[in-house]
Length: 282
Ligand code: DGL
Image (cartoon, rainbow, N blue to C red; front, side):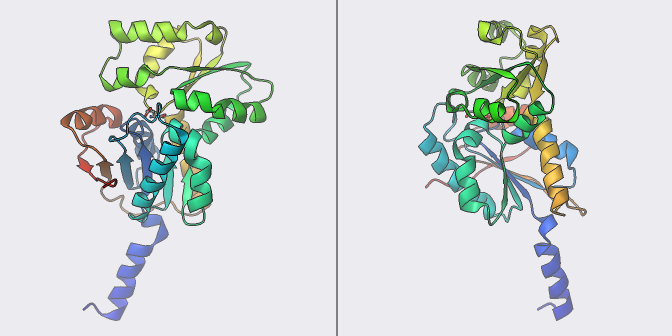
């Protein structure tokens, strides 16, 4: 048994709110683009990541199913004593964020990936803004609604681009197949004359350069990863929750494991990571 003062110090170290990890989740490995931005902007933070690879893609699922998955994952991350849960998936942000706030908002800070981007875009006074995302995100109308409120003078054109997630996951980047898919989607007349394009899916930053090139670098490609990580830092600073000590080891969980997920996870996180399987559904 440790002496009382040592127990008190140990207790303080473990329970210090700022030492607690940031929980991040996505339908799969796309949210790692956001985790990577957090790693760069907040190098002292420990991340516990959950990719729901057993249910990927969320973009084709019903709102009800995504809400159920999101609740269960949030509880899993709370089991790791997360000080903040980031919904690093646009489909889940569009379908489940409000419900997570209602259900868990009194126990943990919950952030999504849509509101910070809307805030950023409303500060830029774009005249015509495009949004691309999964079928779930686009059909929810969440970006349109929030942008209309925050930036009423900006015209919004939104487009579902469902082939981009499987294309990226299969590693088709800057090649003939992906050039054809990207060109076909982005040539849609609805995107004519846009001055910025929101990448409304956390997978898309992987092809950000390819998209910029399609527009001859004349359109601002709004990548939520960095914007969300900066917002997250502001929230932690405001609540005095930035970890000033050692970061500790990040943990990466998936609900279904294959070697392939591990390989593409490295592409998304831009460094070697070990995925562990956490079967939270059985
Ligand atoms: N990364 C997810 C998002 O931001 C899309 C992937 C999926 O459809 O599961 O919406």
